[in-house]
Image: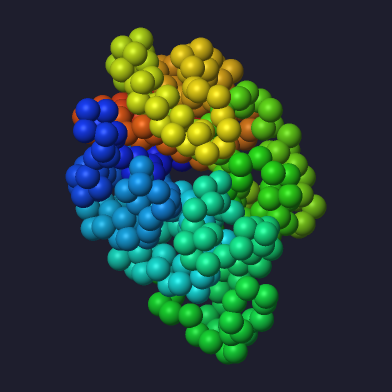
Length: 346
């Protein structure tokens, strides 16, 4: 089982100056965090795409290219690339370039986009939300599998015997599909034989079990190799040596960010009771001491049959030193303990 981290580049908000942290400062800190993740043996680093003032990252592949120069072993992926508002040709080219720089460590994780600011920014109609993703995922898959493309669709110019370069180290890239809980998206990924990652950031994770079972059924019925099936979850988390102190420290900034996002979605203000409920064994948050996080990852692995777990670590912009400590504990304590337990139970 692979264990890694993901980030969006959340910018800390200063209540006194009513302004966000400098993106330059956040990105420099992030590179130190990625370097540490590699050094402590984590398997995967993912970075997401946003186009809002509270996030530092709009182009994951540029961050990943920078990360490639300071790391040696860790896999580098988007988390996610909003494929619906991107050009699949450029997506492949950008990530194949990262793959070449990193020596074959790049992956792509694509999604429809739970944040929709990229659609008007790049000139796409939200009424085409589903059609855009379906068509562009198929094109990206075709590009990934073929050096020369002839293709015609609704949302992009026709390709007539076009060569898409540069090619990745092994000619193609691992493409994961990120899903928030839509059955149709799960079925699409399964039928295409693409790895699935489900974002579980609230509620009861057990409610997502039917989606994993649906994927497994559709994947096998489509004739794909069961040995190549890959399943992952993506959940908010932070690890600290003292769970109570960590909760008290982290709740205000976590709640503030959840409320910033929630205001545009009609959510009620985020409460301490929600936070603590999420920290429980049956909740969706991986915020606590190392042993608590180990137990919860193992619980989810058994429930879903996971091959990968990604902890999303920078919601609300925890302090750089706290992120570094969390990454250290995840790599030196949590990941080895999880892998040891899974080996014993095989």
